[in-house]
Length: 70
Image (tube, rainbow, N blue to C red; front, side, top):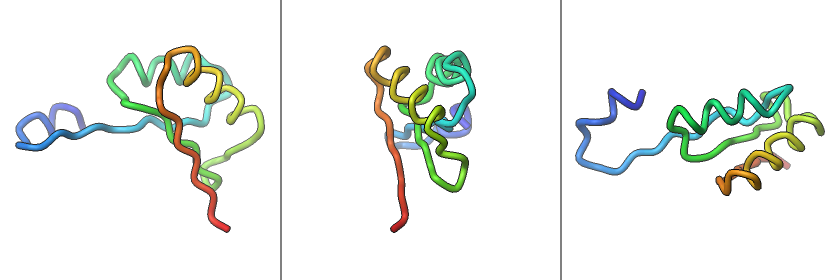
């Protein structure tokens, strides 16, 4: 996706999927070019997934977006 967006005359950023059973997967997404992490309740926003995402976002100073539909 990053390569496909390179030729566009606008700034584009992609967020990574913020659900993971361990922080390593989240760190890999950020190192691969994600501008932040997104946790969505439909994708499994479990307490441990939220905790891992918050810890990684805090450690690496990255954005975390959590979407909840009420």
